[in-house]
Amino acid sequence: MSLATPAADVDGGLVASLRGLDRNGRALFAMRTLRMFGYGFLAVALVLYLDALGLDAWTIGIVLTLTLIGDTIVSLWLTTHADRWGRRRVLVAGSILMVVAGVVFAVTDWVPLLIVAATIGVISPTGNEVGPFLAIEQAALSQTVPDTRRTATFAWYNLAGYLATASGALGAGVISQLLLDRGVPTVDAYRAVVIGYAAVGLGLAAGFSRLGGAIEAPFVERTRTDVRERFGLHRSRRVVFRLSALFSLDAFAGGFIPQSLMAYWFHVRFGVEPAVLGVIFFGANLLAAVSSLSAARIAARIGLINTMVFTHLPSNVLLILVPLMPTLELAVTVLLLRFTLSQMDVPTRQSYVISVVDPDERSAAAGVTGVARNAGAAISPSLSSVMMANAGLIALPFFLAGGLKIAYDLLLYRDFRSQPGAGEPDGVPRPDEPRAAA
Image (cartoon, rainbow, N blue to C red; front, side):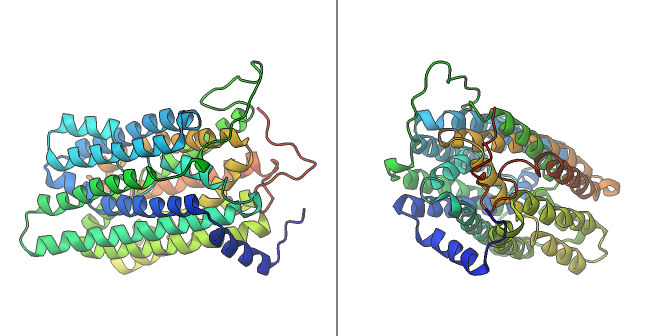
């Protein structure tokens, strides 16, 4: 199989992968859009809201960390059982946990209750995916299109998410600013955003409940000796665990500077108002959306692993440069340049994981690697929030995040550049190459 793919074929595949979605596929895209709008909506205001409630920097960091730890545990439990319990049921359950978390955060400032809600609920402090949704949707979407269109489909899927996240960030900034300008108390202005997040969860529960049975995992009968599962994985668990360890490092690095803390940094460093923060992160996520779609074309030419590494490395250098900029204009410019590259690895990473496992392992594989990312990201916010409270350390989270992400890129390239599927356009092993074995 040639690594080079004509441009016309790539473009045609991109368009065909979107047009070819069935009713379930279109519904999954719609739910992804609604959910990511909610995540972007919350991310801009969450830390500002907790600060307005009177929580100190250390407590805010603990709440954010426990939020991500709770999401990790819940996601691992749900995604590794989804193919047996039913994907639709698990998606609805995750939506209800979003509602619970949003309602509790909106009605109380009692820290123990916030911590409980953060731990058992589904809430996104980063603007990125949390909960069981992403893994299950990836597995379901992979059944709606041929393997050769999988990366392109995931690129559109991520494009929809980034556009929605950008819109949510803009909406939260505008609504918060309007309420503040009308004299609404600061805490109530940001509370309105949290209530909106809970409403998004209700919409998701209603939408997921209408999905058809075609999204469920195919039944595969095995002998007793075949069924040696761990976390829902059997033959592919070794490669999934190796990938999970690397993805955890990448997420740990990213957790030092999630969008919510980045927005807080701009607010502290340059005095940026909520409406302007919304515009900045709208633009950032819009650029991430476009770059995500470009990833399929690049991967068709240089392969999945190369695309993941060679687009991620320069974006991490740019991340390190952001706090070194002397003016708001330059800092925003470097940030936006970073977002033009930073998310190209996402659809390629998702496609690679799906390609190296069996069909009945897909929810579990996507779930385990996703949970590893959540686990990695759970620790660092509690550290970076304290750093940002110290004027002398306020730039350190950027340096730690960029440096560790560069280490991840180099390790990923070293360990997987020669693995089956790494150089293929859609991560599909060639006929003479076996899939990754346990």
